[in-house]
Amino acid sequence: MLHGHENTLQITSLSGKAINQLSPSFEQLPQTDHADGQYRLRRYSVIKFVDNQVVATNKNDFVQSDEINRFQGNVVRQFEPLLDATLYGEGMRELCQLFVSKNGLPNGQEIEIHQIRIAAVYDETQVAPEGVHQDGFDHIALIGIGRHNIVGGEIMLYSESTEAPFFRKVLQNGEVAMLADRELWHNARPIRAVDGGQQGFMDLFVLTAKDGSNELNS
Image (cartoon, rainbow, N blue to C red; front, side):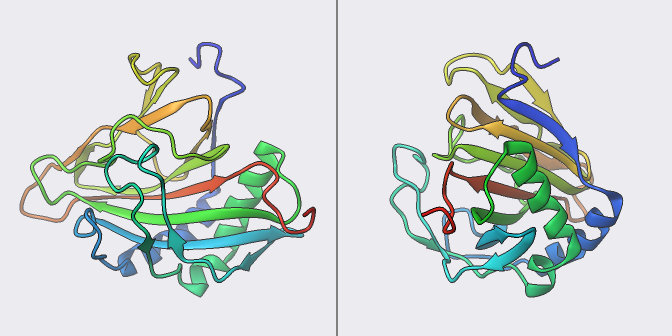
């Protein structure tokens, strides 16, 4: 299935208990003033994972260069942090432990956490407005938490930005796709509501990390 990408792509999953603990807080995601803020509701926190525990930092500015993000590059974006109940719950601890262990990351690893709800507000709502891209990290995890009244949203992975995707998948509840960001490109298909008379959305977490980014070894 992975066509030689075993070292750059891993598919795993969270426990049902973790999904149930993490999913309710998506109902409390705020809109933002950013270019995609009306349909990509988001919270953002930077943590360190120390001795199997989440330790919050005070970082809340997120910026990508325009080389990485042609859509909102060189724009400093501030988001409200994840709720304490989400950040310090057992579900998040399980997710961070999975991310650290599967990628062989060190104690004290810094991890950026994006909690996102993409609302199907258009005929086709963009999940990844920047298109085929890399995020400028070493490790990325995409975690499906919930889907309601939508079609689309498949993640697509590419060996080269100009090639056809070698992998497509709808992330079902609790499914985790971990990828080596410097070796693969990714994108996602737009979503649209099945029944236009009710809300449609896709909930996910995105975790990112750079190799060696930890306070304990610096």
